[in-house]
Length: 586
Ligand code: ADP
Ligand code: ADP
Ligand code: MG
Image 1 (cartoon, rainbow, N blue to C red):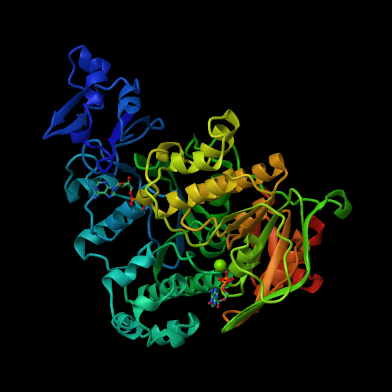
Image 2: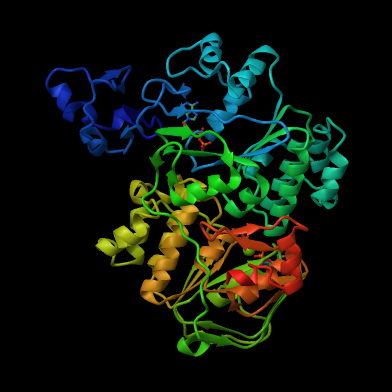
């Protein structure tokens, strides 16, 4: 079974010579495989031979032709002929947190619109509700959809992009929140999410992290049958992520809660079950049956779904507990003395530290403790208030907040950074895994948040430098892109022996990448302390102790998993001071 999908945003029939139709071999022999209707191309899938010529000839990269995995039924929904096709649906279950795990553009929002009764599934044709109910009769999903058609379900929905909230709401936080207080839970939510201080603020003045917490409170305060959170982690630090996770788990004691989340450590902690979603972003998505959260995440990391008989990635993502290298084996890149940076209401104090040649150092810490300030000082963008810095090093820096202010294309940007653009190493080790090939001719200003992030990370690694500084590279990336980015950055450091410092809140990304760890603590927004880079285990123990959680290693994938608070392992590890993993595991 083959499907042909045309991206209607990219397709610009007025600006091309209808190459898709002109070069199509079946069209040349008289078939109507590709025809233009109302000036737009339509591809008839059962006449298409799958040669891929139209895909390559389209000047806008608007066509995807792909084989579906074997034994697929009709889709649950398709956005018209040559539109995106969705196979399978998740099932909301009362009393549980159900996670959705998969890349962006794979149909998660489409599925939720169906479950909310906003979108009637068409089964890939023009199906009526009766046909839909007949198809799913006798299953939990069928029962759920029957409820949607009979009584309707009330959904409370937290959108993915919280930065758009100020465009649709104005006024104070109080006004937005009070309207949502349908089950008398708002007061508690305000307290748990630390929103009391924000209540009189204008929505337009809130930071990303503040908007995220307001949006979570507003969504959870409503009285609904089904709660859907499209990502909870963006802009939040680990403390806040865990806090929100606990709130959703509390909500799920009575209600059905569904969550999309790309931070796997958080999803693992938060969800009871997960549906994996695989396919080809923008073309089709397949939602699996629910799996236990441990098994589901492990299958995702392996890229292999035994029950579905599908392999969706060539290689597994592997975690390892690395034995630290001997201190004296590695030459130092920089050794710095203590320094400080003082702003009107914030003070950063950096302890003396040493960064070595060819290592990746992860940086963890709460928001507002000066991580970005520290990175900017290393990058030479800011000057320390006391202490000085030996500035012999060449530094390449990716800031936390990205702005695309130039009409240059992705390719133009990267070519201006490196002479190796055409080398097979660059193409295979950097461009392809970063998923930039389809975006090369797009202007930076046209890119989405995740696309811009990937272009910025790639540009940072493309410059010639001694020290690479990346401030929150996982922001706006989906789970698949995070895992691939971690791999690219690590291999880059290994093969070039360059030093890379990465600030991030995604524990799996930090664990996959880092050889050593820097931890920031202090009082957010008032003062921060930058501790020196330390061995992973030592640094993680200090960090997790502050967080009050312990990790164990999954037997199968070696990924860290949060221990249940108060469990045998949790108590034992806290006694031993081994928060990162139990000693017998090392
Ligand atoms: P996700 O939530 O996983 O990012 P979505 O469900 O938003 O994915 O979108 C999946 C695909 O469906 C995308 O390629 C998107 O362009 C397409 N799509 C979404 N809504 C529509 C629509 N109303 N009409 C046509 N295509 C759509
Ligand atoms: P983090 O990256 O750990 O979240 P930052 O380094 O961005 O922390 O910020 C730490 C504190 O310093 C914050 O309270 C922030 O408001 C303040 N701050 C950052 N840059 C400036 C500046 N240029 N002027 C005044 N205060 C600043
Ligand atoms: Mg920062």
